Structure formats: C-alpha cells, structure tokens
Image (cartoon, rainbow, N blue to C red; front, side, top):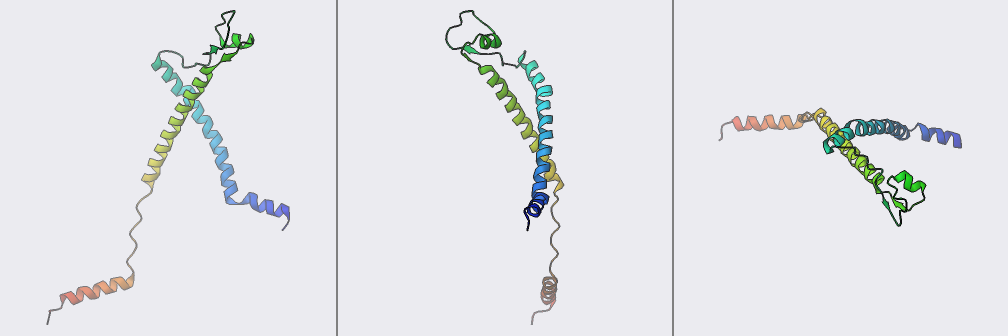
Length: 145
C-alpha cells in the first residue's frame, strides 16, 4: 500500500472527520460563549458591582516610583518594575464566568438529551417461555387428584 493511499484512508476515516468537525464547531462555539460573557454577562456584573469590572490597570510598582506614575502604561513606558496583577484578575473573572456559562449550557443539553431518551420497550418474551407459562396456567386449573 502506498503512502498516499494510506494517508487517504487515514484522512477519510470517520474519527478524523468527526474530530475536524468538532474542532471547527468548537471554535465557533467558543466565539459565541466569549461574546456572551463579554457582551451580556460582564455588563450585568459591572452594573451589579456598581462600576467597571476591568481591573487591567491595577498594579504595584516594585521599587521606587520617582515620578509617582499612576497608570500601568506610563509605569511600563518609564521602565519601572511593576507587578501588573489587575490584568490577571480580569482574565480570571472572565474565565470563571465563561466556565460557569459552559457548565450551565452543558447541564441544559444533558437535561434535553435525557428527556429525548425514552425507556426502551420491554423485550418480547420468547415464544418457548410463553408456551411454558400457558402450560403452567393450565396445570393450575386442573383439579388435584
């Protein structure tokens, strides 16, 4: 078997195609979830907390701050050693909200999937068992001698 034919067989197998479709759908789904968090959930959280939930400008200057710079951009441009923890907090909050939304969506999907799965009909009793039951019932009807 040639290498080209082996590759063609590998690429057309169901598992590879399923994986490719899953990656494409996953990428699109990720954009939907990201938009939901940024455009819908974060504004609500900001409104509840009474302000902006963008902490990306929070930082500590490690060492001296001779010019008393108050923005992260200015401190970084001045070459100061800064611990920029605010961006981490913003990304962490976004991640937690994103994970929560995905959890809720999976939970809803599982609930819908469970509702669709109906209990399978009981298997038909084999013919020989039915015949044995009929014989048993007839023997019970006979008078005892």
